[in-house]
Image (tube, rainbow, N blue to C red; front, side):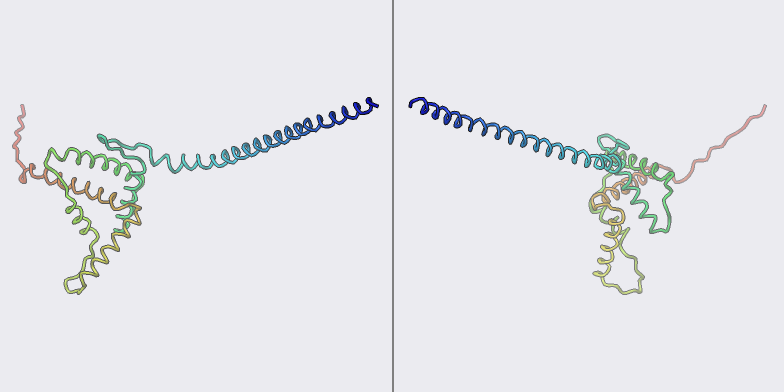
Length: 217
């Protein structure tokens, strides 16, 4: 009678022992599936990033990198090709008002040379006693954009100021320059003008005549 009882208890213990083993197997399969899904998700994200990186790199190489390439250096001031393009747009807008066009075969090189030359004048201008104030820059801007009216024409000062602001803002928008950038350009022009005046003071107004005698033997 004791044998059947012992056999039944051993079968129960076997069934109870197999249950945790099956749970571990199921948990292991779930962990494996989770790892596979995580690997698949990570691989998909990497693939998407690579696909997005290709046009992003092309955009950087074609539109962001070139404007940052160094075009000229004067002292500790660097000019990039982006700065040159901005100056070129300014020149185009100025000539457009006059009904002219920019000769792209030579103007970019002339503008780059002038940018470097202007910066050299500014850096060395203090030794010549040259300086440009904010008030002078304001005056030069008003001369360029303040509307010209006939003496007989009656226009209120407020209207003239509105027209000045409109023309000035329109010019900045067309050249894509902010006000600080344009004021820097006007500052350089004023330095150049003052240097020309300073050099003109040392040039005699009357040309010296020199008599030359030729001796023939």
